[in-house]
View (cartoon, rainbow, N blue to C red):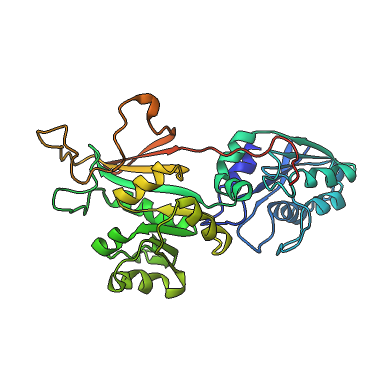
Length: 366
């Protein structure tokens, strides 16, 4: 199963609304086939693994096991590719091991039922938590009908987003900035506040450094347009770079002031946004945190800068990262679960979760 998860994580970019899935076929304790889902409309992981085994002239599926990090799906309406449970029954696998059930309450457990109906032994629960961590956005989408929200912040080591004159270029180094473009590549939309758009006039596309086409030539940058959500209504001239980089059809402006949940649900239901990366300033980030709308925080610390807060420590420092009401007690603090800390050049990147989503432990029907 660990190999299936490793394969699933190899998928490039954003697969949503599909999950990341890997599959490994084992015969007599040896791997004979493996594969992973590469994108919407492309063959599922189970199909890729079976094709890999067949290319190696393997035919003995009735004595083989297949490990998958998600319950095999059944065929149902509006799918571009057929369900894999019937295929596994057709191949007569001896056993199917799935990490967890499908988080979609309408179909959770149906794949297992179809496999058992086809006389296949099924086990569910192997490395379930690790598998769920890989598909947090997908699980939230299926269970709550809302986009998964990641907040990205970049501050000085003492927590300021800019100096007293509003300058923030460049708090972090080139490695951190490259990492942000990779983050954009892995989500399907970027969110930003009107103040940030007005002040910075950003592009907000993903600009990735690709390997050189020929040996000795310079690496070529790849530019990827993203869906961009602007909270508030900035001046139209401030949007020119966003429109130029991503196209007018990829721009959504949310003019109204409403609870974030009321704004986020249509982004998922009407615009198909499954994972939103919020790169707003302190005001927008604070509103997301105050309303409990953040699932994950990625915080870049530029370790080369300490700006300080001045002599009057009771006064709110300018350009503080999180402009939320001061919480005097630890019990009242916003809590998150640290996941990883990494060094990017001279910067530190900390990643943590405010919400962790788990698949259902047993089949549920709505």
